[in-house]
Length: 474
Image (cartoon, rainbow, N blue to C red; front, side):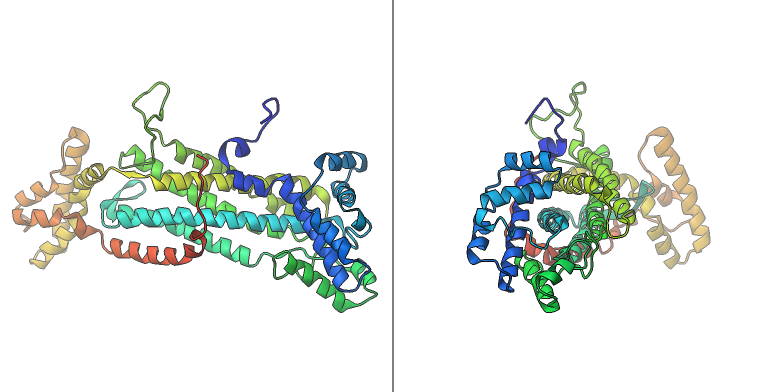
């Protein structure tokens, strides 16, 4: 790392080497050369004056890129694609005259951008699957553990620790479904020519329309795709970039929501993200255990969400067949969104793999609030015994206000059930207290819901877990 120049923290601090490599100059220009090779091969197979030896010469020199030579050519020509055409021609001299035949620069730049986004989406999918798998295990472990549910960040009806985790999981499952859709429908720009008319290729093949269509199909399939966009200008529509970025934005939104919840629960001392043995929470306050990983996810997610809007701005302001005000923006925004999401997923995998539930604190908080939550059950039972629903509601309300005042103003325990047992206006006896104070009676279908979500998640993520192990960069 050159410490006398700015280095992006996404590369030096947050993202994986694996994702960074996908967006590297090496991968970019190797992909250019693969495209040039497959274009030449397809042109040869369809009858142009290109030999097997020339195609083989191109194939043999896909990886030995002389970047210094290309940089010198670019300085002279002020054109990066032509600089690499010339550099490739020197590496494969027999094919020098047929490289880039019929093509425009966007043949390599745009097709390469799509190919790289596809590879990056596949890596994101694998890490997203690992994260969902972690949440499956966590939710299953705690699927029946009652905990306070919160609405408006005020105690509400009980849920379970595992059920809450399935809310996070479901968001990520939506993201995975969106990602799968985008990957399934991702199309190359194809072999379209300067303004998308394929005129140059029609000329090369003496007006043979069928050969031009077959040429595109051969190149597209050789690059691992099934189709190209039906029409293009000089570039593929930048709408594709915006659609892919919306998937990354969705993952960032889901991660931010999850880590907001974790941070709130860590404040309550109910849940904690992993904390290493020698980790320092604060330079001044030695007792602190800050949710630093969750905060880092939140910080990166905000950046991703803001940056992911940029390709939409580019897409909506392109003029006619294309303008070049997309180029610099694309180089920055797309790569950095992917690097950011990669970092978010790696940190989230680490957090969810080691979350700690402080079970006694959770149970304490449930016990403190359970009498209030039991009032509806008490009311129904008292009505069954012959009471008047409206009158009994007022009795319970009066006693609840007294108990709340005792808790809030005097700092004492919740004595609502004692008050109700002592109140002659309601038929609520001492032997009913134990039944009312059973938290399991208040969690509804939480365990079953967790099982249902896990079953769906496991089926969805199974294809992406079998061959992948994440080496975390945290």
